[in-house]
Length: 110
Image 1 (cartoon, helix red, strand yellow):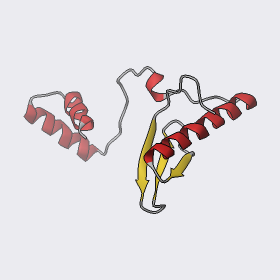
Image 2 (cartoon, rainbow, N blue to C red):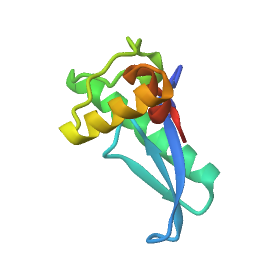
Image 3 (cartoon, rainbow, N blue to C red):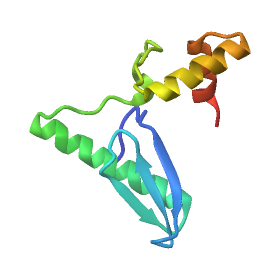
Image 4 (cartoon, rainbow, N blue to C red):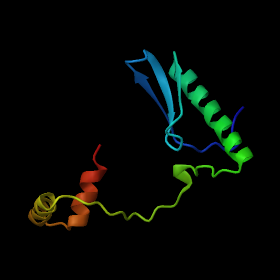
């Protein structure tokens, strides 16, 4: 079973605990698939997601929208302790940039 136009966000990681690759789907965080190879883990999780979508459809439940299909405004609110707010404001001022620009740059680092 496979999904037509599957646009979900998949990831495959190694699990030291299981000694296998784990297939994951961001939109279905409760699902996973263990396999000996990354390719098999991806194939497995995609199959489990497709089956889950079919069950949700049959039950009339809401089906998660793919993350990459959603539109984002680019705005979100983050609460931090006052001390961190002060320190970030100081860093921004010393760098000659806005607090928003500094925070965006820090969040964008990998």
